[in-house]
Amino acid sequence: MSTTTAPKPAPAAPASARPAQRLRKRRPLRPAAVAKNLGALVVAVVFVFPVYWMFSSALKPSGQILSKDPVFVFTPTLDNFTKATGVDLFWTYVTNSLVVTVGAVALALVVALAAGFAIARMKFKGRKGLVLGVMMAQMAPWEVMVIAMYMIARDAEMLNSLPLLTAIYFVMVLPFTIWTLRGFIAAVPVTLEEAAQIDGCTRGQAFRKVIFPLLAPGLMSTSLFGFITAWNEFAMVLILNKDKTAQTLPLWLTQFQTAFGNDWGATMAASSLFAVPVLVIFVFLQRKAVGGMTAGAVKG
View 1 (cartoon, rainbow, N blue to C red):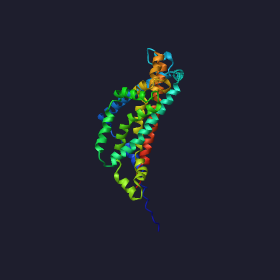
View 2 (view 1 turned 90 degrees about the vertical axis):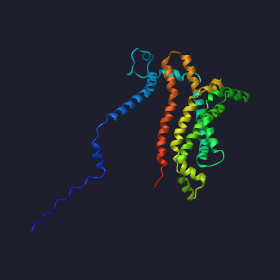
View 3 (view 1 turned 90 degrees about the horizontal axis):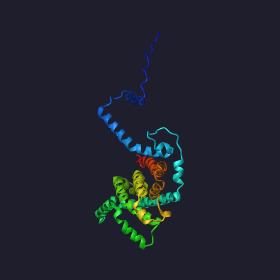
């Protein structure tokens, strides 16, 4: 007597394949979404194209920069960069800018962390006045104090001094740094800090092990803004540092353009060299900010 076996049911599709099948069914594009995307593309092109033109002009031969018709396909050359870096004391300007900018931003981050933590977490007399003072200092135009700072530096015999310039830049970026980090610290739940203290951490250990990793994105974005502010500052170094050995890249760029006149290839190369550190710092800190958000996540 023969027995017939029922056919086995086909295995169900894995769960991972179901989203792929759903993705095949694309929704029709809506006119409003298309208009928004086109508008965003136009805005991006408007902002990116000048930067592209500056770098491309720095790499073009001199004859193609001033041509009647714009040249988009060309053979790159480094002659313009050779002219820019061949100026006297170029590397001295670069070193001065890096020392002053990095020093000011590092000091501002250390002080702003302590001040921002105190404003966000502690209740003390004069707290509102301190917050108001930080806001007023952030809104104050520093250019109106150039003459007073010059007189103080002259009387203290600190003209043409990189430490004085670092201190001034530190004071310039400090209010914004305090205000920004205070917001990031306030956004971290207090319960995380309290839980760490219940587990045996002191307040300092709770800040270092729990809060500080979560502040990585805020530290990166704040340091980027401070770096740009100090890197581009022009008025203070123009008034306080007359000695070329104590000047920074913004003054070098102005003097370079005056010396080379209508040599736009060399001028664009100098402008590109001035912009490259900011672009590199931006790309580096952007990646670190995303990594800091991941590393600072709370594990369940």
